[in-house]
Image (cartoon, rainbow, N blue to C red):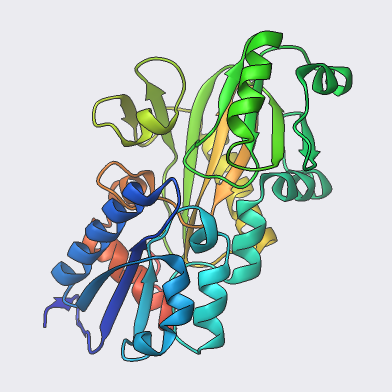
Length: 319
């Protein structure tokens, strides 16, 4: 087997990915990239394209691995069910535990915690009902004008998100978002720049700026090569970089996340606004956590090696 630095790796890894959500194809790309990175780093690794329920039903099969690298995105893989099954079975796994994962995946819960802890975030309104709201019902409660960002509460990768410019578009946005979740988040649109900050335990990373070629940073722009431009490190004042880092690490700790995560922001030129934090961010060739790590001097294979060692209880070296 290969080496990273002076450490010989003895053990094997199962990379679970794929799943049954709208983010299945992205999860497969993440899983394949992680699998390749682990092999390059010297680990014995196996790629398992399993429905999330198989982690529960076939958990005994996973006991022959020393650690499970969780590569799911969205749904039960990201909101904590998979983490709960692995934890109860006593199998080490990468990423956050079940409670932290569930909190981060629920946009309404996230917003409530942001408000309670004084995290800067756009104004918002939540809808939690089996009944689909009309645009009139939302506008009677809404105080901040258009545009309005409409989001399903429990989806990732900007799935089901629309920026509504008027009442007609708001109605269409609600109808689209509610296909994915009965809980909806209505958020004030913040004009300005799209920034993200990767929190990787033991690593000091820079922020990344995302510039979509057109429109906003939706699913297509995230996962289509050439659809967005990325600037890393983001060209922002050092005071803004410090604030992005402080807020991201504060949210990471507040939610009880571990190993790695990614916080998303808007910056209007004066103030940053935290939108959410992702407990299992993408690990594809276009993903932002690997990009930030690379800018900090850590390549992809070393990054997945570090995360895997964290899951096995080895403290990451500072870098």
